[in-house]
Length: 338
Length: 256
Image 1: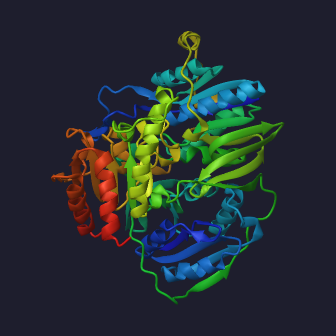
Image 2 (image 1 turned 30 degrees about the vertical axis):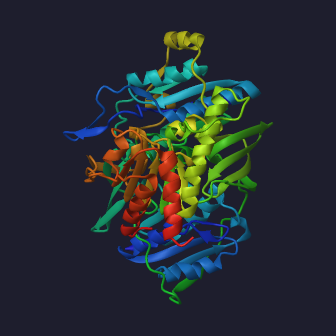
Image 3 (image 1 turned 180 degrees about the horizontal axis):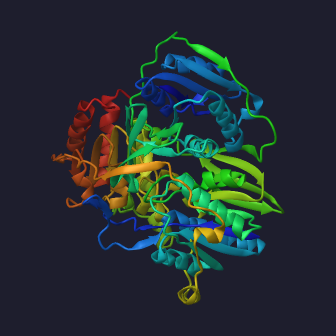
């Protein structure tokens, strides 16, 4: 089978799910990595090291910033000429969008955010979560090429073999007028990205309930609640920083204005599957559990022993998060030599 | 400004969704407008308020999906269209996008088409970009800020690294994220207006297309394997002792 893998990158830095996609491709056949951008030749080398047999490199100023239309046209033209059997994308914002639009050009479908796949007689059968993981569906595609986007961290990252090379082919970027222009970026303040994180420390409504704190004078009730929550989230962030973890939050905490939406884990937030998920003051509403249930080791700290989060947790502490979380931060600091 | 909002009706996000005898069921949980689509309706209404014009909301489904349209009307949309055709079963996203693109063409003169970022049932998030591609319009997906001047638009869109600032010319397709801002609640007057609204139902012939062919099939939907975990509760005489034990247990998992 002739498999293409799209290497999603931002300013020449690949998103790790791209390497996982090469690993998946290698289990099925010959892998051609697609490296698009400007000044991204180094990514071709890395693609070979992660297992790509060939690289199609479109290195052009027109591809400096990701733009849906320019990238779609470049990819669709290549696919129409060279007829791959299967296109794999990481399920990143760009990967998902590109897969969607290329599928329209090539008159085929997309199996999106896939967590498992198998091949039988050249046909791919995927498994993917729907209803935020409350259910799983199998899917097949009756047209060619088959297009699949792979959920980050659902597949192992292949080992990097230093010095391994392959066949590099330079290809042309799409030309013409494109309807959008990228003016710039504002960077996120959130640090480690939730969907790529090995470890996530999350806070819920409970982080605003520290009775030992007295808010500064002059705040109204809502401002005092937010102030309390910020003190609570500071503890969550301290633990996250020791563990090099991303900071998550429940929908309740986001809706109450404690932290920005970018941190929300759950059905209407990010779907995550880190190695360790530490839930602080999160009771575990069904829509939150749906977003983090595939985490490997779940740790819950909550004062309510009946909280549903404990049903998913490997380790639980029934207690006061305002005492436990700082103590845990201190314990990890000591043990991890910081 | 002629504005269209495409919405979907889905089981409530708090519903316990399971497969029973091969069918997806959600008990007596209500069907609601897809929560993401409420942000799209809000974004559309704000454009109308700033620029003038009309907001038309569209969905595909059976008669019961009129409830989702009524929610959008109650929030302030001007009119609604339901596409209900017996040929429409088990549609994949590109088939859905073909119908929505046909509806938007049929309405004619549309400047802005809004979508939620994805539906909370299928979780695909493909339809906005696919509809844009079919229309040949810019796909401004995952948008949280929109500024229109004349036929120029400037948006901020969420990507992994932060926000990308993009300019384009209208007409364009937008998908809206929660960062846009909380959707409004329907007003009392809005609810009254929506309850009396006559929503036109169109067959595919009414939008001038034949049933698109779906290429994605889902032969089997299953309940996820239950997580076999028994929670080990960590206890101790002090927070420090509990933390010490817990940290050792987590480190022993060898995943950090």
